[in-house]
Length: 111
Image 1: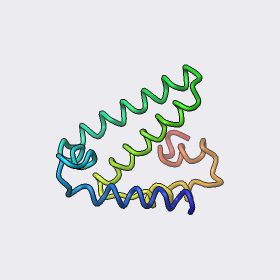
Image 2: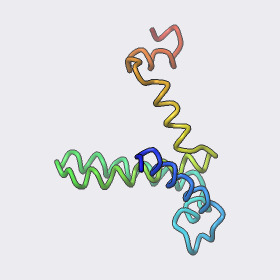
Image 3: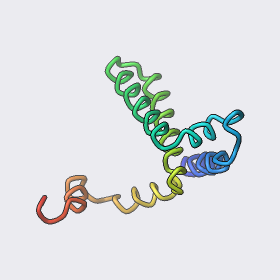
Image 4: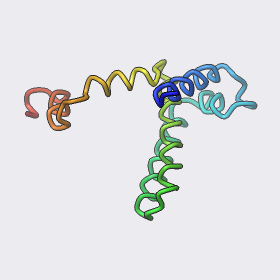
């Protein structure tokens, strides 16, 4: 089983939970609370990831990153996107310098 298939399966599960009861599904509860609730969770998980890194706690970095990725997948589903959309963008960027890629998104004035 590839890592990409794990992301795909998780994305599919999250998408199916969109219509579930908020009383029975954490994901459904987030969707029912709207985009701001999802964004708050992403912000919270990003902060916890940073704090775990600053503390040098590798296990906690992994756990918090998993939470951050999960909530990012929830946000993708909220917008009707999937992990495949992000993987396609990463494939597009592969082999391109980060400096060049960023400049390409900012237009000619930034170069």
